[in-house]
Image (cartoon, rainbow, N blue to C red; front, side):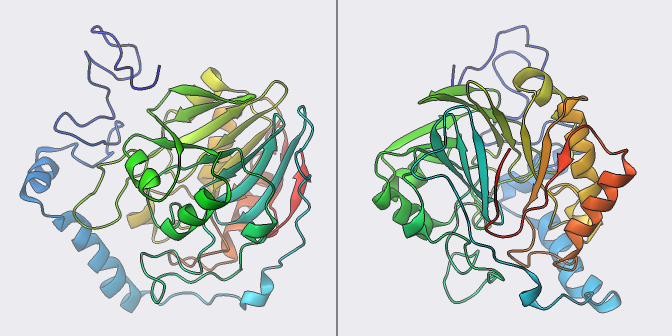
Length: 359
């Protein structure tokens, strides 16, 4: 049941009493694994109550002011290197037993499964930013204009960062598809409702909810939430699973590597497709706690699937310049990691912007 706090004896998932391990007892959320940060130590707790963010600010200053001086950014390719291909989703809907995936860009996918059309972390704006005149600019336009989308039944939102939750896109989608169900982690319903979303469901980690012919599950992720300096980790972050009669999909959202990938697979899998992030990982000393590397994405795939064949679909690269690695490096590294791993059971599909595949 959404919002269930567990029993008094704990439930074997790091929860004790009525407080879940990823809930901060003074409010908000945390990463429950060792070294998760966000209030795990007395120093971080004191920082929270003082309202300061010195650890994050110092790290950001080291990255932007020191690292950039001693280690200049490697060159990026010409933006023309990123091919935009015509999307070919099934209109108006794919058959009930089919799974059709179209990459619109970054973490935005059109997933057609169970006879429904689902969108993940939709962003159609030119920038991943609170303002239209500054912030990371798209290298590749959205592969499907919003006006060309089929009718959307379900929208999945993983967390509140600007490259995953865009207020302009929410307003446009809510007006275009007023009957859509929006599924979000705890704390984000007010944001969505204020921008016109009528049907909103909030879930905690491991909660599930029926949405038409599919069941949507909320999964752990190692990340954080924030839209400004004063709201860090007040809302939850997560990944999503979608289970239909004949197909299952795991959309990891934004995450660092964590030990619960195997539990996701055993509790909610196996999956036909795993959509995993592979970009925004350098410098590693700073990004390791929030973003998986391409090599860790392959390991996460193996953890989740546990030998069951599936498709690994990399995402979260080639759209916004967020960190220091070259824009075209993530797919090369994930292919090398895939080959070095054996490869794992299944297949690797690195989509081009706009590419559609039936899996």
